Length: 121
Image 1 (cartoon, helix red, strand yellow):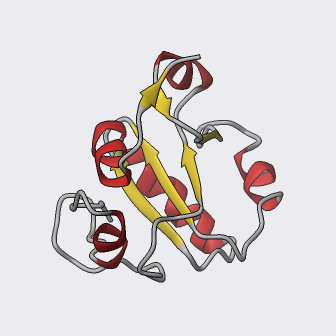
Image 2: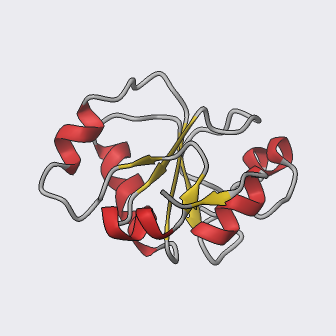
């Protein structure tokens, strides 16, 4: 599930599987996700992340606890470096009951699709 359009509204409406043109398994709202999550390590996050993104490391033992603290009624966009970890995180979030969660793929693709800057700490 990768945003493939530079237009935020169009991107959210045309989510496809990472690297394919299959439709998203998550709900599509037609608008940009309200919460952006970077699922890379804190070190990777510090090197550069999308402005305003939360850092919840999918490889951390506390990932499940961290997502449990999130509001399930929000819409979520999830990204990593290349799209592999974001796909894993989306699957875990959907299994936990999130219904509006989308895989944005890799950092650069996600930043472009959302029209946001990549910033460093």
